[in-house]
View 1: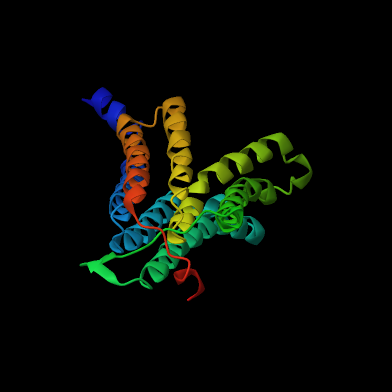
View 2: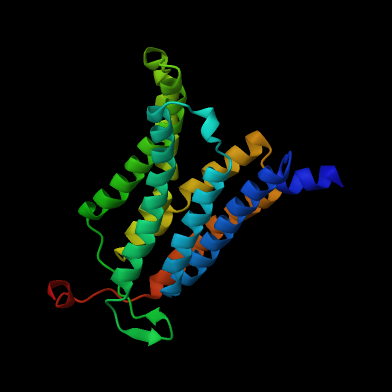
Length: 241
């Protein structure tokens, strides 16, 4: 029974680990539901996006003990490393909701959203969000070195790897910002973070349930891209309103 449980959910050593895993999986489920609804231009999706990041934020905080970091600086760095991704994710949900609500209702909770013609400048905000997300991912690591005053011993190659990996993971909120801006291309950004999650889960034996949810996220992103292919483009006149 234990081996089957480990296969499904990964190694869990106690109730705290179980709570962390449950919050993480619930967040992934909320994201899957959000992408399913986003493909139908349903504004409830943006509430689910914010909810997913709240759950992930709680999951990160649940495994943290204030006693592990005694100095104010190290504690601040860690909390910023948790808070910034949380703010970016919730902000993406609020941003998308506000932009979607500018369009008339097509059905209950569904908006008659039109697509914007792609321009290179539309990449700026999503990529900026991803970069800030990536930089924030390095802060918990820096907090450990700050705790012992070892700033001169921070391994720069490892830190760069964390930032690059975090930036790729930040393409999730970045892609959501792109969808809020009505860019069909942004669906492709949402495929990259779950691919990283699959790799991480395989390497760390994170459990088949997590892998399944990552695969479901990829499938829903592709399905959303396909569904938005039938969404009409905005007219030239509408661009200047």
